[in-house]
Structure formats: C-alpha cells, structure tokens
Length: 120
Ligand code: SF4
Image (cartoon, rainbow, N blue to C red; front, side):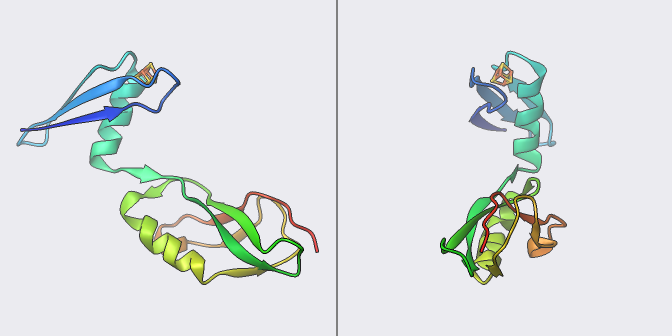
C-alpha cells in the first residue's frame, strides 16, 4: 500500500487529500470536503494531466514572443515533448487569440492556440 498527500486545486479551500493506493489498484481518498476532491485525486493518480502555457517566437510584430497554451489538458508525461516541439515553432503576425497554431502537439490530439492577439 502506498500513501500520497495531494492538495486539491478544485477551489480556493485547497483541501489536503490523503490518498491510499492499495496493491490491487484500489484507491481511497480522505480529507476532501466535496466530491470534486475525490475525483481530482483519482484522476491525479490514474492519469495526471495539465494545461501547458508557454510562448513561441513570432515574426513581423513588435513583440518577439506570443503567449500560447494547449487547448485542453495533456497527459503529464507529454509535457516535455510538447515544450520541445514548441521551441521549434515560429509564427508570423498577425495572430488572433484563439487561432490554432499547432495541431495535435506531440501526438496528444490536442492543439496549441494563441492566447493573445498580436498584429503586424
Ligand atoms: S475537496 Fe472540494 S472543497 Fe476541498 S479544495 Fe477540492 S473542490 Fe474545494
């Protein structure tokens, strides 16, 4: 049996979650004030995922970089590959917030979108 302590990010209360992972894969969650904490802990143990926010280079604008993010969460173990792929990306202004800049980043099935409008 393994024990892990997590902080729930479901709301500002930030409950401390105590998670017990049994040999047979069973998971018990304690310390959560509501059901979202239980769901968060199980997802964090079984398939942790994150939204990635970063920047890519942009040409043809006063600014040198453009803020971008994954359109939704990607598996945590794909974050390095995602960041490495984005280091090679260079876009050209104008770019509008919400534009898809890279499709299926690192074979995650998730696109990279601009989070800001940058004009020429
Ligand atoms: S368990 Fe519920 S109350 Fe506690 S931090 Fe998570 S969402 Fe908020």
